[in-house]
Amino acid sequence: MLAVALLASCAGPGADAPLRPGETAGPAPTTAPPLPDGTAPATAGDLVGRWQPGTDYATDPHVVLAEDGSWTGTDGCNVADGTWRVGAEGRLVVTSGGHTEIGCEGEPVPDLLARSSRAGFDGAVLVLVDHDGVELARLERG
Image 1 (tube, rainbow, N blue to C red):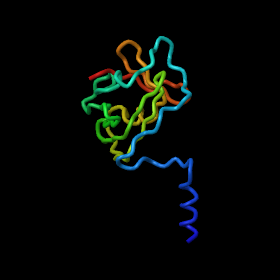
Image 2: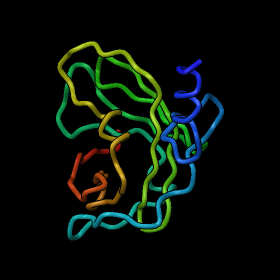
Image 3: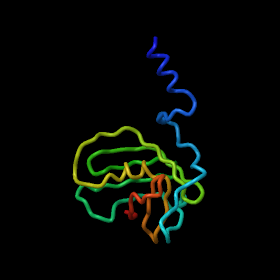
Image 4: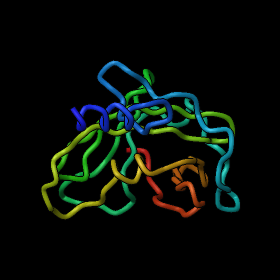
């Protein structure tokens, strides 16, 4: 009985609960960290497509952002998916479902996307930034 009460109190409003199948990410945040100098904010149309590191890996790490707000990706061994939404000035909200944790050579592209709070472009290169304004990744269309 106590366990049920504790779980119920954790699930109240404001809890950071993962999205359930069929749910989508909410609106993009209203404040965002700065993008690196010379980087233009991304729009939804800019982001749709396949993105990969500039370094070639035999394991092919990448993410694919779909028009419907879903994404799929791999670090080269593990598959992940979730939802994404971009707002004004490249503000980004990304959710991620569960995934396996097999170690391999590659780059954790799905994890980097899931940790991103803002997206922009340095020319044709996608730049992902976390909530502290730290650059997480530079990805190329592929």
